[in-house]
Image (cartoon, rainbow, N blue to C red):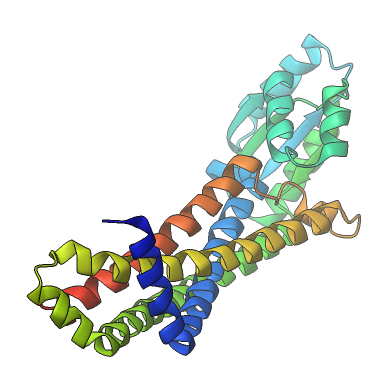
Length: 297
């Protein structure tokens, strides 16, 4: 099979059904934009809540000059306190690694950390109960301990961001899946119309001995191109969202909430790969379905 034949026939099919092709590409682009944005937001939520996993509600950051005796006193207080359900110590090395991961794409913050700025070690606590008064009391007791720099709890802002983001993810995923199904049907209909417009040519090709794949490949490629072009537009939307998240995280007004919310480079490129792969799959599935139903060779 010659490449120039496949390219020519595919281009002819795309031009002949230009309105359906545009509709299919736009639908694929919108659905994959929502799908990619959902993945990106999910990774952001995972990052921003990384410190609060496993039920951790309080973090006590330690001073730079904390002594071993003060460490022991804090541990004894936590062991003896019935208000503490569980706790763990995160040392300097682990704290620095966590900070570098959370701020991987914040050049200024990474430069500070890598230049030697100390990332405090900490004790992370899971209270015995979620009672607000209990947590407040426990926080005050920790702050009174020698060697404790500051105590942070799961703030309302973090909970709000996580809750709103989770709702947005579910909504976008639902709409995205619905639009992906619509895109699949549009691609199927586009391929069907292309086959109908060229039905006489296909009959002649069959009569002169053309193989199944000789007939099918241009139509398959047409669907894959539609999926890929739609995925390309979706990638633009995903990268735009990522840039917006970076800008928000760097804004002093939102930094306390958005700190660490940005997906790291690996997560961003995994999302991009998933969007492109899904675009190819949707295009191939739509054209393959149309060929199996309407092309009798």
